[in-house]
Length: 186
Image (cartoon, one colour):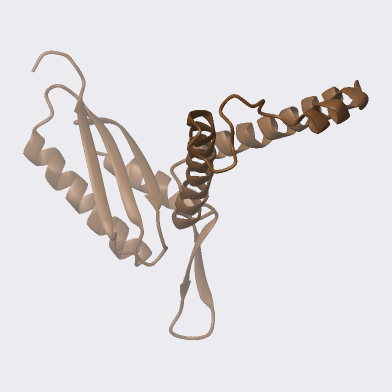
């Protein structure tokens, strides 16, 4: 699902929950037309049908609750998996002649990580690609040693991103670099 799809889904869910809460609040305060604040939430006819259908009504409610919980768990797991819209599979570029060049996105990210960790001042690096292939967003986190010169590392990261852009023919639309310095002797 795209970023826009996720935003639309969560907006709809939020609006439904707000509308339900506002309706319940309005009914409780008696401001909702036709609603008596002293009346029961469920009608007596509905309560009689519920009791008549027992134990099947309870079983149906339990099954519905479990299904809703599973759907919610799956949605939450998908949200926590990777950044939304991260590139998976292959980047595909049309060629000048008939045909396409296909590059695995994970391989590209790993290659950029290897390039970044080639500097002795960079202990670890992590790269995430998001967005559309011709102009992806590049998210980089580098863990630096305590004695790494900031200017040298900055130039190394710039050069690595330039090499990445030249190699993949993907100019980053957005570049976010986070540098963390490991504690130790400066």
